[in-house]
Amino acid sequence: MRKIALFPGSFDPFTNGHLDTIERGSDLFDEIIVGVFVNTNKKSLFSPQERKGLVEASVAHLPNVRVIEQDSELTVTSAKKLGANFLLRGIRSVKDYEYEKEIMTMNHHLDAKIETIFLLARPEYTHISSSILKEVIAFGGDVKEYLPRPVFEALVKKSDHYEA
Ligand code: ADP
View: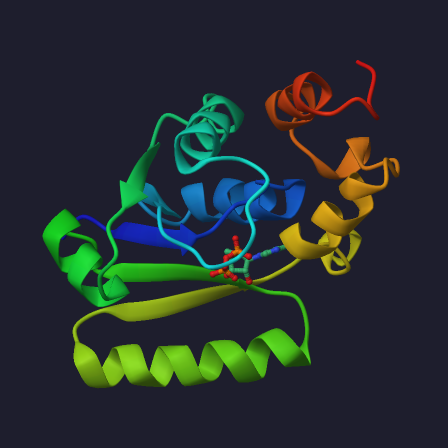
């Protein structure tokens, strides 16, 4: 059985924390499909199409990773359609753990054949989230080291605050 994992998220913006989880996961799974949520209530920095393109550019060095726009439906439904038998998620803190445990348990109830695998974030990424970076970006703070190069370059184009 090929081990295929779906890594779902908003990725607004895609960070080095997300990338690290995918890079480490790419050694564990035959294939990782990154699912970029199209519909999110969160105020978005990049459009879904921009986010998908930026994730693609950031994972271009990983041959067994591909990126899709994920439909508004249950994650387990998307996984099933894609032939993914695993969900991949990252955990940064106890707060993430509590939240992810609920989601995992519900997903298991919905489809017991799909297993969720968690990777603990590396210490250098445990303090970063897309939402905190968005707040810092809004006021022009230095976020370069937390973003893959294509994401930072897109930010430079979009915002008056940043220079390449
Ligand atoms: P969501 O909107 O579902 O929380 P995110 O784009 O914020 O989506 O995150 C997608 C996944 O990446 C989640 O499993 C999240 O815990 C994980 N993640 C987010 N930030 C980091 C980080 N800094 N290090 C490792 N994993 C992370």
